[in-house]
Image 1: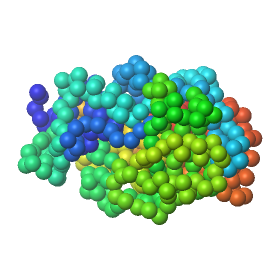
Image 2 (image 1 turned 120 degrees about the vertical axis):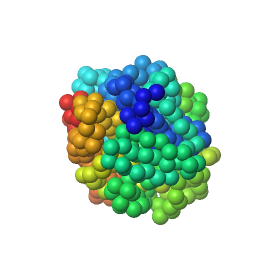
Image 3 (image 1 turned 90 degrees about the vertical axis):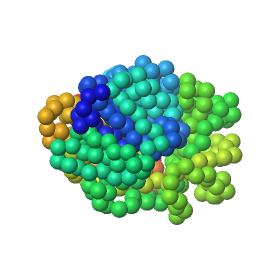
Image 4 (image 1 turned 30 degrees about the horizontal axis):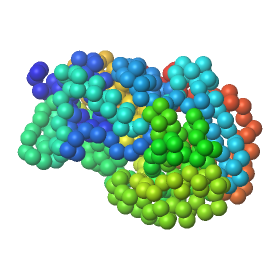
Length: 395
C-alpha cells in the first residue's frame, strides 16, 4: 500500500460511505472505510432511484449490477387516501428516459448497498474495517489521524464523515446538536407480492395521501416483493432507526382511509419503525482536511426520495474535486462543498414542503388535489427537472 498519509479515511459504511470509497478508488486513491457495526450492511427496505441516481451509477461503474436487482415501474401514481380518487398518473417508464435520459427505478436498500460493497471489495484500493468505532480524530495540518475505540490509530490525507444523521464528525464542524424531529413516524415492511391485494398489485410507485398520514407501496426485486411505507404524525419518539412499530397505533392513525389503503395495511403483522428527522441546511460542512457527505452533511426527510441519491451525487462530485486538485485537499473539499450545498439545501427544504402537501387536510387538501389534477404529465415531469436533468447535477 502507498504511504498511509496519502490515503483518505471515510467514517461510515452505508450507501454514502461505500459510494465515496468506490468513487475515490476509481480515481486511483487509497481509501479506508470505518464502520462501527460488526458487518457492512444496510437496514431498511425499499428505496426509490430517480434518473439522477442512474447517472451516478454510470460514474461508479455499477449500472448493470443495479439494473439486475432493480424494479422499473410503469407509473408513479398519487391517490387521495380518503376518496380513492386518482390525482396523478405519471408514465415514468416511457416519459423519464425520453426527458431525462435515464430510467426511474426501485430497489431494496440492502441490494443497492450490496452492489456498492461488492464493487469496493473487488478494489485493492479500498480497505474495509468493520466493527471499528471511531473515538476521535485530529487534523494535524498536513494529515488527519483517526483513533478507534480499540486503540488503533490511522493516518490519512483527509477525513470524510459519512456517518449519517447522528454524525459525530459533524458535531466537530457544525456543532448544531441533535437532529430536528419532524413529528412524523415511518413504519416500513416488505410483503410477498402474492399477499398483496390484487387491486394494489401494480407495477407502479403508488402514494396514498391523507390528513396527517400517507402510504407508499411499490414492487421490489423484479416484482417478487412489495415495499410498504406508512407515515403519520405522532409525538412518539425513540432514538435509533430500527425499532418495532405498534400496529395498534398505526391503524388508529389511518382510521377513515379508503378500503384499498386499509386492506394493504391489514396484511402486515410486524412493522419496523423509524422517527423521521432532518437538520437545518448549512452552507459549510468542511473544516481543513475534514468534510461531510450524505446525511452527515444534509439529512433530509424522505418525501422526495432523494437521501441516498444525493449522497451518491456527493461521492462522485467529491472524487472529481479531489482529482482536480491533487496537491490541495482542503481546497478540493471546499470546492466540493460549494458545488453541492445549494442543491442539497433545496432538496432538504423541498422535502419538508412535500411533507405538508402529502398530509394536507380540509381546504389545503382540496387545493392540492385541484392543482395536481390540473397538470399534464409533461408539466409534472418538468417540475422535477431541477432534480433529474443531468445539466442540473453539479460536476
